[in-house]
Length: 53
Image (cartoon, rainbow, N blue to C red; front, top):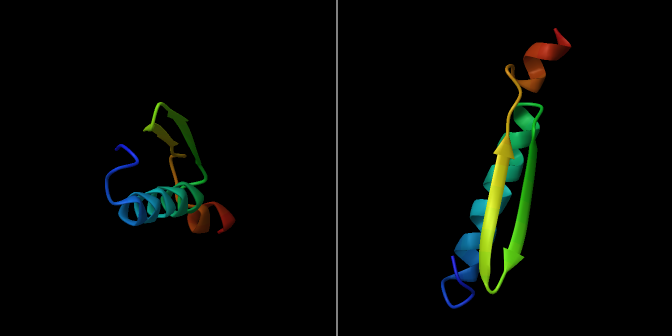
């Protein structure tokens, strides 16, 4: 997504991916180059709440 697109929608999407990463004991990374973003979402096998039980 370039900077010319709806940046608020893009930011909201990144927040959702970050929240998903926390739920599944994973991580979310993003990088930006020339106005384009690359997002990586790595998830664990179980949700965080399942690991605590």
